[in-house]
Length: 584
Image (cartoon, rainbow, N blue to C red; front, side, top):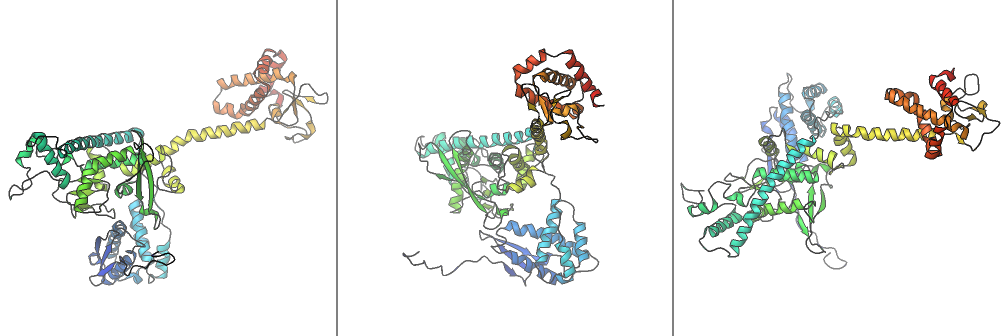
């Protein structure tokens, strides 16, 4: 609002990031959120010009802010398009344009793709583009629209020992870098405060560090033939001319940045794309003593869809084991790199910055992160190739990020990490062998608890202080209504075993039964030690559970006394019962 009650005037011009079709409609220029351009030349596809132009138009229609906001999305489609057109070019019947595509051609393309995630991606991306064209014939459209089943996931979480080794390696590597940079940072601070005598070794080292902090380079010769060599007067103070003695004193290497990324993964469960897009965390003021630092971290995840890309998390650094301590250390390790990059390109807010041994990184191919890949000698983020190289150099089988995220979210945090609960269960938890294996004892314990509770509920006999003259005695209790049994026999009356009497509401138990039932309980325990557990459970588990319930109702004192009062008649009767003689 410009004044109270009056709406503010709208901007007179707006910037629209529209795709540009150039080269006669064969070249697409895709501008991402940062304004950088990726060029896709459809003239390189091995098909007819009409089909090239049609595919270029479909591709360009998606290169808009509401569809594809990053070059990652357009490259995701460009690769499968190249494979698809190469397949069409190899057919006996050429395809001049989309309106000549047949259902058989599409099915042949589908069958030619491997049953892998790559094959699934190739099919689904090309399908999406073709369905955007209204000229696609009806039969072909029906075939293209058929559901494509995703292949079963083959990626599994790390074993505990392997993941611990990966994290320990990353922690040692980053700790070394952090200690190195903070130690040299203290020396630089002393030099800037005038602590050292001018011209001394310590002073020369401080002056060299100041040059590294400002430019990313140690003081070097600019003369032709000597370009890039460290000036002789600083070599002794630095300890040598190699990168370990010069710029690495204040700047992290690419592999050390991977180690930091692994620690962020292990701490928070973020995937590599989220780690790559991290902006510099902002410290919030602490209302307390001031010793606690609270960081506000902005996270991006473009796979969530338009309008749901961003979220924020707060992390507190109040001790060595707190979630914000790693962020504090990362800020300390990247402070000079961030300052140098800000000088080269004001406004750059990337968190993970590393210094390369290359002269310049501008234009160096990187995995797309919707932002600049490099400025001068400084690179941003972690590429998939770099992650694989880090793992190989340290003796691990694969990149730690995809499997590591699965490990953290399914086995350590055991909750979704920037996913819905349904996606977490379907994609991560239910498909992971370690999760399924760990669930076996939990499920078994729950099932046993349910069965135990069911057995307790099955005890339905009524406890009495004395016998009722109208009741009929049985081997285990007195029956109050033999004619109306819940377990009727084929000729009427009760057809159940005497072991089921305690589960019948017609049963009456009084003190005269206590010794006999206590002896039956003791006998079943003896059988348990001599029989196969499964067979014992099937034959005697139910009766034993009801006796356990009765024992709890009567109390330990009554049960112990009943065992001392067992008679020979009780023993003979229980022997007949267990042998099955009373069931005949």
